[in-house]
Amino acid sequence: MVRNHAEALLSVDFPLETEELIQAVSEFTLDPAELVASGGGEAQSTQRLRNRLYDAGWTKHNFHIETTVDGVPKGDGTSHEIDHVKFSEAGTLALEIEWNNKDPFFDRDLENFQRLHAQSVISAGMIITRGRSLQDSLRSQIDGFLRHHRIQSDDALEVLGMKQRTARQRDSVMQAMARGEDFPSAFARFFVSDKFGMATTHWAKLEDRIARGVGNPCPLLLIGIPNTVMTDYSAATPEL
Figure 1 (cartoon, rainbow, N blue to C red):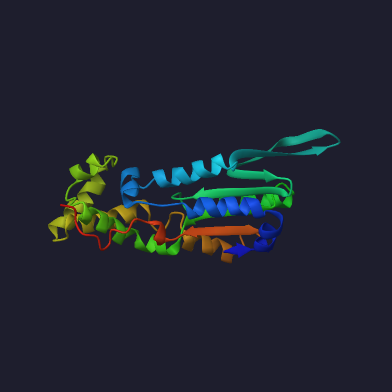
Figure 2: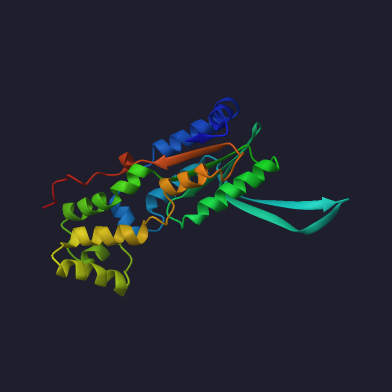
C-alpha cells in the first residue's frame, strides 16, 4: 500500500533503495518452528530480515531536533529513533518493522514519520508488518506444524527451544484437552490468541490508522508480509 504519492517518489528519486528493499522482503521466509521457539516475540526470520537491511545500509538512527531562537536552544528538543534509515543524495528513507508489538506502536511510527517529514528530515516513511493472510493463517499453520512433527506435549515443544510458558498458558491448554480438544489444536488456538492477538501489530490495525489519516501528509509505503512466505505444514504428511 502506498499513500501520499510515495510510489512516484520512490520510483523516480529512490530506485536503487527501493530495489534493495524489494530484494530483502522477497527473500524473507518464515517457518512456524521459529514462531513457536520465539514464544511470540521477534522470530529468527525477522531478525534475518533486519540483518539483511543493516547489511544493505539501512541502519538504526536517532534523529534529534532542537528549536533555537537567536542561537539559543529552547527546551531539550525531541528525539526520534528509527530502526532502519537509508541516507542517499536524493533524501532519507525511514523504515520500521513492527512484527509483534502492541498496536499503538503504529501510532508512534506514523506520527514520527509525520514530524520528521514536516521538518524535511525524511522523504518517506515505511512500515513492514504481518499481512492479513499471514495473520489469518497463523493458527492453522502452527496446528499443522505440531501435527507434522507429532508434538503432543509441552515437553516436546521445549525440546524445540520454546521458552517455558506460564502456568496460566499451560492450564488453558490442559482444560481444553479435558474437554476433548487435542494438543495441537488447543495449543495453536491459545498460542496465537495470546501472542499474536488482535491488539498486536498486524495489517488490519495498520489499515485502521491509515484510514484515520495518521501520518499524513508524509509519503508512506506499507508492506504486509503474506502467508506465502511460510513453510506450509497445513496439509503435510506427519513425520515418522
